[in-house]
Length: 183
Length: 192
Image (cartoon, rainbow over all chains, first blue to last red):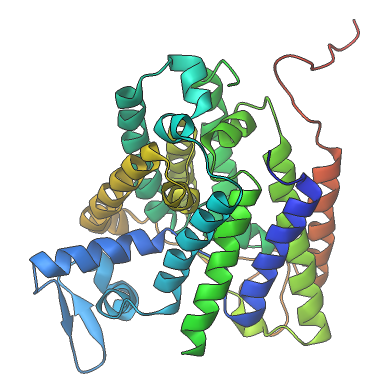
């Protein structure tokens, strides 16, 4: 069982506040681009190049806004990238400290099993496809659940509300159609 | 160096919080999105409200640097991207942050989600010029109220700090007001 919503919400709210007090609002999805760029630059060394003013790229997306993505991919030891690695560490450690998820849940989550039985291959295919759509959409929107929905609405950003409206308008009907059994 | 230390501390705290509230579990995401258990929704509303009240109150009192704010641009693509993210979020039960956390907790499907995500992000990198030329990425960094100390264009002349605090309390109130579930067993049937 997760934390009670009041204490859990307060805890997460304090983390949001600490982030903006000490550094900047939380965001995650940009780092998928940065990681892609790091990998791609290993295969295609000409992808990211250093210029007199900073960094640029043959890819227009990495080169936009004065090459800030190109710069971060060339220097992965920056706040946002380390933040995401630390987030994985924190989540993994927390799950381990509360006794782990169990082999069955790690293989296929309960809600999937309740609706589609023990079909890991199907589940992995749906998770892969879902991941593709999620990150394509997040990059088109310029942020994800963290950056737009949580950090955005917290800052009274109109973009956060527009994003949340789109995300829930699609997510609720899709979830109702796909997961009829509660699991 | 301080920056990296802060990234480690705040990042780890964020990941641990996501795990403890159930956000890294596709089961809780699925129950929230299919409206059969709104516990996670209440948690998130509570968190946004708490963060908003503290941040704007801190800015009014002067101990939170307004320059730390980072408002994103509002454009048509935000809505289209939101629809896409919502679709994949419901299918997989993961969003970018929670997918990373779930993989770290040993969920095998989360690794497939991340692989798909890296490919999806790469596909966007390649197709970016098309979107950029479409004009759907043009917009402004709009906020609801006018926030002192920033040059964000605002929808209203109301004090941005007050708007942020009031909306923060509204989020908390909605968290309290939301029922445990909106669909499925145990929902009271409205009287005829």
